[in-house]
Length: 412
Image 1 (spheres, rainbow, N blue to C red):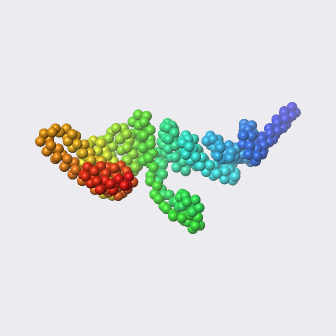
Image 2: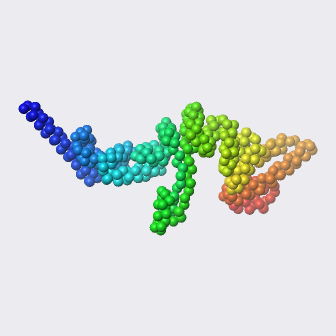
């Protein structure tokens, strides 16, 4: 008989406890209705230790309210609170809450917008945490892990950045694809519409115009380069090389990775190795003028001027508008000027020295005449480049063409 009385008492106690838990969950709901998120959190913290004593529906409500309490108004919550809210909504969603599903979508949007706001304020660590939480909520959205890694780099938290970047490598993240954008007629802003079908649909509504489909290049090279750059900054050169070799093993034909490898060796001071890799890139993909331009720069560094000029010319053959290569070629050609002027300045006043001076002066002017067509073309491609205009003015002045100097001066 005593046992039965004790059992009844125990059952009664458990029932009262469950009622208390329900009251706290209900109090949290009321606090949320009043916009009192702190009170809602407080009530839920009291209920949480004995949550298992509630039935599944009340547990579902608990997680839904917890998500709402920690999300608050969606703009003032910390990264940690948003993460807590996301986990709570996820749990409620798994238990069958349609409202939690909707809240989770809204929270993801809030996380992304809040991360963008943090980026704009240069609070990169907070942005990274929010972006990583977005990735955790939907592991298929690996783009957020990529952005989280980049923000960690900006925050100079290189240890955590490498963790994210190595995870992207493990996932064989590529990031390539297509972007489907159009201009919002009302705002005038170009927006990403997600897919071809969605873009086509929005164009038909006349709310959008000027549709554009653009190729998004692979991000594997960028990822490998970031990993290598971090390890190089930490003087962990073996890890940098290992990371690059691992990336190349799975993507041997990725030109971006080869470019990144060349950059890695350049940063390490192994410039001959970097140049060899770039020349391999140029052989495999002779369509990129930037590759030839970079090879030219590397030859210019070791003062092999003719080879540098040859590679700049190859870049311009691919793209005559690639002014960077043209300007580098002009600089390479004009580098011969220093030797001429140094010799002129070192001459004496003898008849023989005067004759040599005249020879060198004529040689210098011939050099200027050779370079001027390149400068004229550079100004045609980029008429606002004041450095190019000033260089052309100097050459015309040395050649005695004051009319041309005055014409160019008017453009300054």
